[in-house]
Amino acid sequence: MKDERFCNSNCPFTRAIGTIGNKWKPIIINVIGTRTIRFGQLDAIVPHISRKVLAEQLKELEEDGLLERLAYKELPPRVDYKLSEKGLAFLPILESIKEWNMKYEVALIPHRD
Image 1 (cartoon, rainbow, N blue to C red):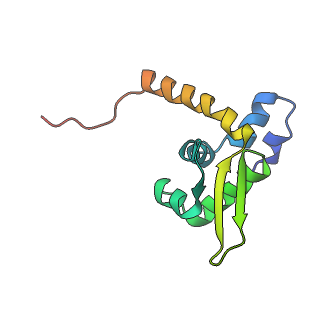
Image 2 (image 1 turned 30 degrees about the horizontal axis):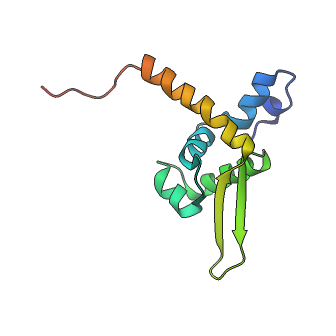
């Protein structure tokens, strides 16, 4: 659920966090990347997310203009998702976050002797 206090802030950084600032949205954007993908594929790739939460997050990303939902009039119905221009512009920011994490993360992988 979006926190409107963030989205309506006078601070541009706070508004940006209101748009992309929960744990799922950056992960979903990263998984979609430059491809077109279906709901079932996202559900299989994104770890530990319920189908309900995934559907909610996709709807919010679409409402915020980061995602395009492509519905086809077929039987059975088919829906694809892809990043919009705004969503694609966020990918380099995610890449910078990944690089920052790789540089400063403390490995938590248990070592076996």
